[in-house]
Amino acid sequence: MPALFTPRADRWLRAAILAALVFVLGTPTLLMAWVRTPQVTGEHDPVQQPVLFDHRHHVQDAAIECRYCHDGADRSAQAGIPATSVCMGCHGQVWNRSEQLAPVRRSYFEDEPIRWNRVHKLPDFVYFNHAVHVTAGVSCQVCHGPVETMAQVQQVAPLTMIWCLECHREPEKHFAPARPVARLTHCSACHR
Image 1 (tube, rainbow, N blue to C red):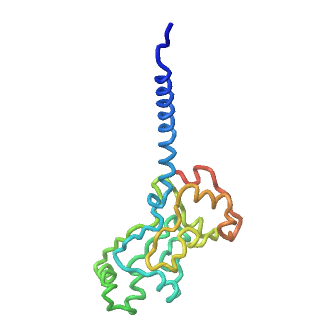
Image 2 (tube, rainbow, N blue to C red):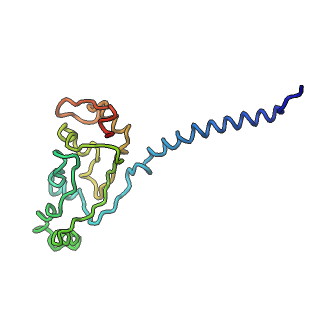
């Protein structure tokens, strides 16, 4: 009995099966790699803000500590964006006629908050608590980079799950803990 398919047809079938396997396995692999690239994670993307704010001037020149403006960092889940009244605490007297600070004055006198644009974004399904990290001795720069040297703040870390897990597995490699740190690597530590 002659063969139903020619050897050439068998080769084409094998090639088609191999191509389908490569596609089925390769596509998810490529997508998983792609979502970890800086283009997707937002690393080093400048974020335009409604008011020019230079952290270099406020931190290096004026010696203002991070938690003066972000006062929720050591006692709540969010570090918080400072209220305009915090800005006006100084700028009611210093540079109080500067055109650059006109939006800050308008916000203060009209009691309308400034709509700052978020720089560091985590997915909605991720739970992150600033207070837990700050009270454990994690400095702002561990996650946010050298903000004190940035004219415009940008995200410098990928903020991916593997990035967080690297620190949680070996915190002593990333910072000097102020107290013993629980190496929380179970899913519900972050996914709630």
